[in-house]
Every structure is written in structure tokens, then in C-alpha cells.
Length: 139
Image (tube, rainbow, N blue to C red; front, side, top):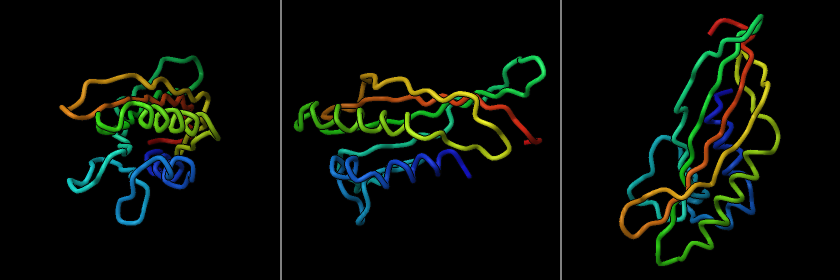
């Protein structure tokens, strides 16, 4: 299964997170690739894989994947709700290991939330998920 799809499923299915996010067409405002222009904050954007690099390891075919997520809310809402969204997303990223096709997960870690500059009128927090994989078949 695609790692981005797994992240989307995990985040959008979580009821505590859904209660913090706005709704978009009857679903929690979790998006991958892009945010629709009519979506209301707060929302989460899974930006996807930002780095995919083989690592030098003796006798293993190790690959590091990095995925970025953005949490955004309006400044008028204050930062409390945004901090709660980012904290819940981080907790979910630390839960059960993700799976990558043709690989065994060696390590999974989440960094953030980190304050990030955003458009005027918005607050943003960023999270980075790192996966260290041992490839078991040719990609």
C-alpha cells in the first residue's frame, strides 16, 4: 500500500482528530497533494514524499523516506486549536508502524510540530515523518 494513502487513512479515520478539523464534503479536512480552494481551516495537508534516498549499509538495501505534513488554521482562531491538531497528528504518526510495498520497516520517527511561516491571516505547523526501510524486492 502507498505510504501517503496509509497516512491519509490513519488521519481521516481518527475521531478525536476529526472533531478538531473542519469538514470537507462530509469528511474530515485531511488532504493529500493539494487543498481544494473551498476548504475551510483547520485542515491537514499530506505533502507527500519530500526525500527518498538510499543509505549505505553493509548487507542491507536501506532507504530513507521523508514525508511532510502541514497543519493550518486561521490566526483569528488562536493557536490552541492548531496546536491540538498538530499534537493529535503527531500522536497518530507514532502509532502502529506504516508499511511500504517491497520493504521492511526498520524505524519510524516523527519530528515536529514546528512553527512555519504561512500566508497572512493563517498559522501553520509542520510535521516530518521519517521511515527507514530495508528493501526486500526491486523497486
